[in-house]
Length: 390
Image 1 (cartoon, rainbow, N blue to C red):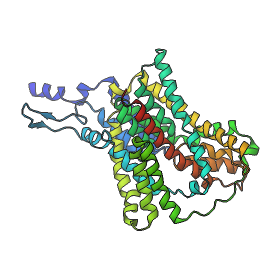
Image 2 (cartoon, rainbow, N blue to C red):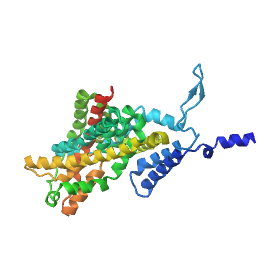
Image 3 (cartoon, rainbow, N blue to C red):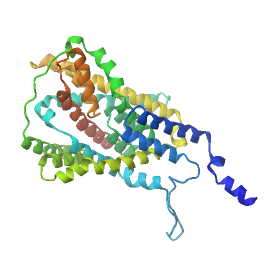
Image 4 (cartoon, rainbow, N blue to C red):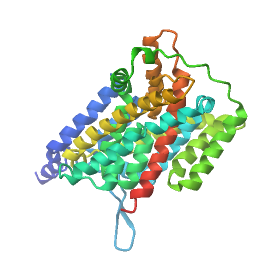
């Protein structure tokens, strides 16, 4: 009888708590969105599975290793413990993903129309506005966010999952699950969130503006640009160098033409492997005690606000540029200043085609879209530099 009692007490059924059930339902919900609705499946499938695994009672997926008094290992840690600490806490997984994204990125549209850098920069307004909003909520006693928490929440506005994970793992690891889910959810919802904002801030005539064909960009320009970008950022903002350094390295492999095998690996096999472990590591921070609280709802709401402000700021910057530029800019491409590559650019193109069936904005929108990746990485470096010591 004692053996049966011991078996029962060690079972998941005997140890499960209501919070575990809720979080397993959240994990199943993420899997549903990924599989049935197609929302960021490459990330939401492993995150959803990680959420389910971490909430299985007494399974020990996140257990830390145990050592005796003289330092000998008594019991090893759980799988998700090692994945998180080796890949996310160290910052390695987001950096490797940035390298893969760089290898898939074409700087041509940005180099052909450099003024679109301003649109990518303007879209980062959402990040800093939301940091101030999180601090204000805390000062009024509505929610309890530190300045480090506020910086981690604000970076959601860049719509760049790896950047959000990189910043949050350094500043507020306890918020990682909520921040990552918010960042990737809003990236997946770009086709739903952005169009109403785009239509509200532009006229039919503005949406129908046709832009001039982009000039050809030489291979030499594409090779020199990532090197110059890295050197400039590294000298003036070293805290952003890890993200942009890996991004520029991946892009250099793509453009130099002599390491095609390495470029192909970075774009495909390597980024796919790391994406699996990144998702599982994020899921390991989705336990009931860390996720089910009012702060999580605040993070989701503030993240949505950051994304909307960033979208609006990019559009308004494009309208401002038109007031001073002889060459018209379609304001729709300003919404692509958030770094949801290439989905935001596709949405700009789709809305443009609705206004004018001959208005193809995709390549024009890729300029601010790539600029948004650069801008969010620089904003992340600014955040880390300003608040990491607080």
